[in-house]
Image (cartoon, rainbow, N blue to C red; front, side, top):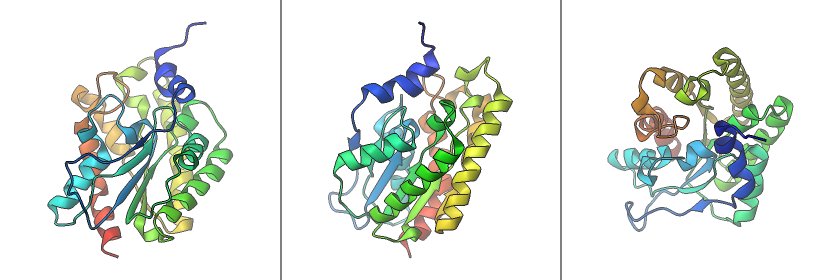
Length: 232
């Protein structure tokens, strides 16, 4: 049976990979006032881009430029992960730290695999609770990024852009609703990913994931929310 390329990137890796738990590089101060944890999937780990191009690493840099002493993020993320796989990996990481800032970006693989939206809601809610625990119980120190729309990527040529967009919107509506219930900030980056369709430089070499150029836009979009969180 021939497995198409998108499946190889979004699905197969999740069955072969172990937990990916990244500690920050030495580009941040050795001892920082604020700590940062970023949870997610390929979009958080920065599939096909350098570590410095990851959106959360870029966000930490922007925060430092604005005078906030934020260390580069710890990252628990892997290409292919769904909500349930992320939760399993978090438990396997053994991470018991408390952070000043926690981000969550998850759900594209739930959508891609055709998983139940009801299941996504339940598991996403549980991840919000996990993220809040990492933030010392402070929901004001947690924020969520919306799911990017991969249907606008070069790799999705031949796919139903309208169907993918509709499903992404449905999953994002669930995430936004759960964030509102939990009083957690929701940052909508999906329009940025749709606008990227006219610029190949906003995509990584695989044509499916995003380049540092696009991820910089995500960091800039999240900056005000992150600053507000750290100043509470």
